[in-house]
Image (cartoon, rainbow, N blue to C red; front, side, top):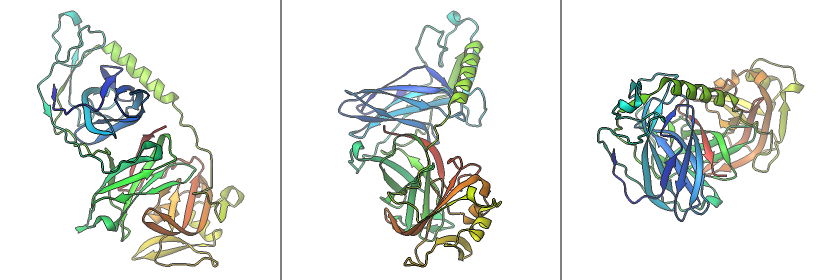
Length: 406
C-alpha cells in the first residue's frame, strides 16, 4: 500500500491490527513541538470519528469510539497538529459483524490452517506474520494551512462546511448565520464566522471532554441550510481505498463482538447538572412545569401560562418572540429559541412536542449578541433528560459527539 505523504507531522500507532465497528481504538501519537494533536478516521464519504489527543513531551494517547454503523472495509486514520500543516496517514481495517451496508468493501476468507495459507489481507491476531499485502493504491491528500493561529489554551477551533444553495438561490457568506450548540441542561451556544461563502469557523471555549453537539446554519431569510463538520485543515478525502480481504477465525471474531456489545451497554453518559444561568445571567422568568397542570403540548402551555411569548407568522412561517412590556422591542430582531441548547427553526414541531417531557421553560429578556447575530431575548426549553428526548434533530442540522480538549 502506498500513500503519498509529505514530511510527517506526527507518528501514529494503534493498539490492534483490525477493529470491529463499535470497539474503541487507542491511538498513540508522537509529535514534536505540540501540546495537542488531532486524530481523524474517514472514508471516501466523510469523517467517521475522531479524537483530540493531549501531548506531554511530544507523546500522548487518545481513544476513538468507533460508531456501530460503520461499513466494513478500509478507512484512513489521519493525525496532524495545529503547529504543522503536514499530516500523517495510515490505513485501518474495520469490520462490522452486526450490520451489512451497501458501502461494504470486504471479502471474508475463513482461516482453517493458518500456517499453510498465503495471506493478502488483514490477518487474525493469531497469525504470526503481520505483513499486509494488497493491490497497490495511491491515495493523494492535499492540506490547506489554517489562517487562524489561536492557541488551544485560548479556546478550541471547529470548522464546518455549509451548502449555500437553496431552491436555486445562492447565499453569500455575509448572509449566512452558522451556529454550534452543546446539548444539555446548560446553555452553550456559539455563533460561527463565515470565512468565505461555504466555510464556517467556530471559536469555542469552556467546553471539555466528549460532548454531544449540533451544528446549524440559517440564511438571512430564515432558510435552514445543510452544514457538516470538517477537518480544521480541510484535508481532502481519499478518492479510492483498497479492497479489504479479511482472513478471520470465527471464534475470535465472535468473542470480540460479544465483548464489544457488553462494553457499549455498560457505558452510561454522566448527566449534566441543571443550570439556568446563561452567559452569567439568570432568567427573568422561569416556569417549572411540575408546578402547573400538565398539558399535552407546548402550544397549550404557552397559551395558558407563559404571558410574554408571542406566536406570530412571518411569510407563513411560525416564530416565537419574547416580549415584555418593560423591554424595548425591535420587531425586526428574532428571539433565540432553544431546546436542550439546540436552536429551533421548525417552531410548529416544538409547539406540538410533548409538554410532559419538558421540565423548565426559561425566558431571558433584553438583547443578546452571539458572534455577528443579535437576538431579542432567549426562550429556552429544558427537557427532563437534557438530551432531546424524542425530539429529533431538524433537517439540515448535524448531530454528533465530539471530543473537546481537556
